[in-house]
Image (cartoon, rainbow, N blue to C red; front, side, top):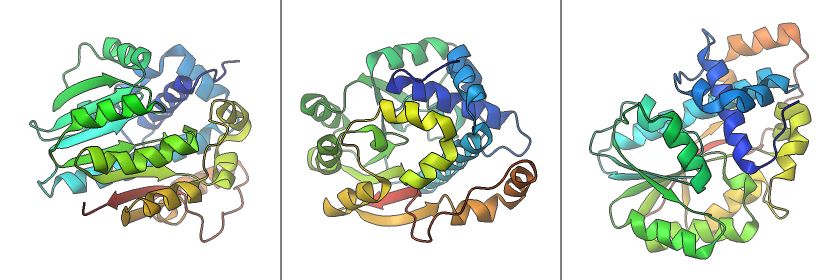
Length: 278
């Protein structure tokens, strides 16, 4: 049985879920590169998961919400740079219609960047793509990344990243992004502990094993961002908004398995767009 042994393996799992979503006629994301990126290990991790249908549902909804937030933000015509921290196997520079002059910086571990570059070597990104190897838990690496981002108006993406970071790194990232560069938009996602357990089934133990010991919960992550001067511009809930756009899919799942109990009304799980003035 394939297992998650390193945090990078979660990127393989997420790519596998995007691949399975792409194969569905009612999938929430279309990613023709996902299967190749997931590879045998990623597909095995996903297919062995006890809650694979819910995992694909969650990854698909998250991808769709982030795509929508990003597209809407870029339509303003102000953003010149996107920096994707913990980019993993994200394929937005290839699969989305982006401005050709947009600067897109992918940041991740060197091994992950090299693996992805090799798998996509025959594909041409639709914007100006740069890659930076960095460990975001290290102050020097974060400073190097944000210095490279520079003074152009920038949107930051942290998809599926924040729940793995230690507290100190997350607090520092929240403050340093705007202090060292002109990051003024931030798309992030969070999931409550309850929703994580319901959506990942027996894989939750493997996921917990690669998270920092002092990682923060969904509500704590939002509180950190707010404490560092960020403001919530937009929020799409994984429960309320997902139900609104995916009622038919949920009913199909309900026909084959028992639906989990809904989380509380104030559950923070979802995708957020944060902004700040300075």
